[in-house]
Image (cartoon, rainbow, N blue to C red; front, side, top):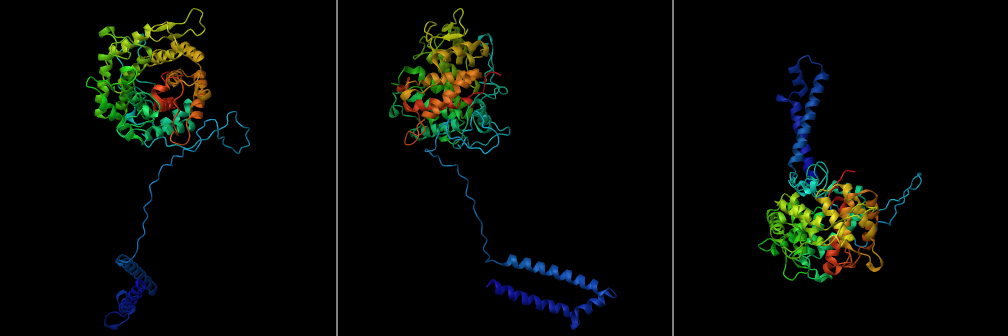
Length: 514
């Protein structure tokens, strides 16, 4: 039908042109032009006429195209790209899957390994390809406490003022630091799988049920550990693939916080200390990264409780922390409180300097110097006194010193000692050598010291965790609750701690220049 309309219109157009050519009174169109243009050459007149005709045809054609109402316009709505579906059957072994490379060059000593691609983050990266400003903490959070006579800014790590407070946990900064520190696709894939397991097994109200997954009554501490794992990979209450999980976890911790500021549920194992400090650490980081007013207010109450109510001693006589308020401190509990106060400081919260001063006094009180002629020449740490020295305690003590501003060279001997005595991470038969509490503190501490000691620790840590992460089924991405203390925190705590170990490359920036 459209074609017939076009033919009719073309016929009408031809008739109109014939009439124009005849001119008024029936004289020819060219005769009329001749009378008007006089002696102008015919080729000039003919050229002008054809140009005019071409213009007229063009205008008529355009008008006809606009007039058609029955034309069909086909448009396509491009489907938004979706992230690759998670495949639990893909291997997550850092020491397998060599990639064949066609090259005339001789083979390298360490073959390249491949792993499944993982979604590092859905954050929009900033101009310098680093993490978002909200994940950095307060860049002006400078400590006014002369810590140990050394002094330190409140930043956890180097990187421009306090900009590296919470590491570079997203985007290009995260990828680069993972590669630079000794991680890669395999470790990132393991982190991705662990976070997925945690997300899938979070209760509707936001907490994790410790007993349901092989632990004891330790929901507050386990929820704090799981929240730290999500924060460690750059997810906050505002951004990230798992922002809903973070939001619900923070809301649950706020809901169980008492009026005096402590995070605790009646009946939790090991009293108040562990639960409050671990949850308080998580909430401090959540406050610094997400900047949600309710979370910030809750984290501040938690800090106030830690110093004003729970810390042993009063005023200038403050020292360490333990299970119950005002109890004489032990190093295991105090380590978590030190980290809580440190993260709170860089998150921009108000931290009474007496809290840090008391932490330093407590570390001094449980420190044992190396014996005369000791080849390590470094410091060891005991549980409640210098006589109860142990490798796990020494890892905690040295990490506390690092984050309170001690010099690298002053700590090197102590770090070398606990690695030599306690060894590097090994899974062992049926998980018999697993000690994720030691691995967590040791990983953070040895990473900060760096050097060959870190390379050895990191290689063994990756092998122990990547080789033994569960693959397939409901446990896919988790770690079995085997080894020391796992009976308390179960699969939730075990998975969160394993994930935190593998996030070490970007969770906090290095404290010391190489």
